[in-house]
Amino acid sequence: MFETDEELSEALKAADRIIISNKADKTYKYRKVEIHAIYLKGKRIYQVSCYTDKQVFQENIGCEVVCKHVEEHFPVKLCQMNIFAAGREYSYKMTSKGRLLKNIRKSNIITRCEPETNTHNRKKKYILQEGVVVPPLVDMGIFTKDGRVVKSMYDKYKQINRFVELVDDVLKDESRPEINIIDFGCGKSYLTFIIYYYMTEILHKKVNVVGLDLKEDVIAHCNEAARKYGYDNLHFEMGDINGYHTDMRVDMVVTLHACDTATDYALYNAVLWNAKYILSVPCCQHEVNGQISSETLAPMMKYGIIKERMSALATDAVRGELLEYRGYRTNLLEFVDMTHSPKNILIRAVKANISAEKRNKALNEVKNMCDELHIEPTLYKLFIQGDKEI
Image (cartoon, rainbow, N blue to C red):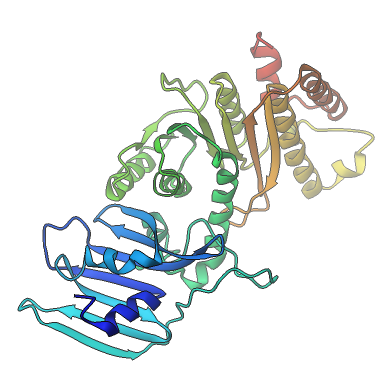
């Protein structure tokens, strides 16, 4: 039909955004299809998002086949189509009697897709793109139901993308088609769901995620949400980080806001399991604050807020060096969490081939620091006293 309707054909070819909805065939698997023009490596293409009741499937197509792709859905299976192009909205609807209704009007919706530029004012491209519905982000109140960022939630939208970027940076070269993840102290954090979405819908990998928490109501809530989103390989269990056992091969350990020494037990387990990736955002850290003392650094010990911050930094520095000692390439990166906490460090560690010299140097530096500050952090004790393999 598009070949015989020149105006419709031209509108499709110039479209920046196309929305196809309203089932004509009630058995059709998709309830909505959205097509967005994007630029990839300087070339204009279309990103297609097909929505079922529980999931979204994405693919990129060339501009030359957009008309053919639209015909797969409209008007036989989905009978409503809205095209946004060059400041206009083209609305098409196929009635039950086979009549095509058409309306064209000016549109104030900004949909124009512009090529990439080298200017400093270029809009940042986020991994979780606006306009693509991500169910957990909708439930968090960050996205509207049609995938638009709620203005008051834009900072959190950027923070979540920052987290995904940090994950993406280590996984972009991962060749294995299936990844197993343990999330310690998951709480109600929707970042667990975001990881699952990113792995399955963006990386297109099979992923198995187990979330662990001590609160029964939290576990029930999270399992219900996973079922709601159709995340079949994401489930949550009650359990303590210390002493948790699994027969599953663990590729990644995530610990977001595990309080105080719970982070240490999570890191320790990750190392024992030989997990390739570790992502940890520590929460409240009291242990070292109750131990630390130093005549040399007496002014740092005098003021409570300074002592507290120094204790937290010392704790994470020790954790980072101990992970280096156990064969992980470790970075401590800035990460602003969902509650705007000043404790905004993310420990990211990747299993690597680190020389014995560098590993021993890291251990010696930790020992010297602990002696100077009169501290004995839990992870240090677990590795030095509890792990006889070292």
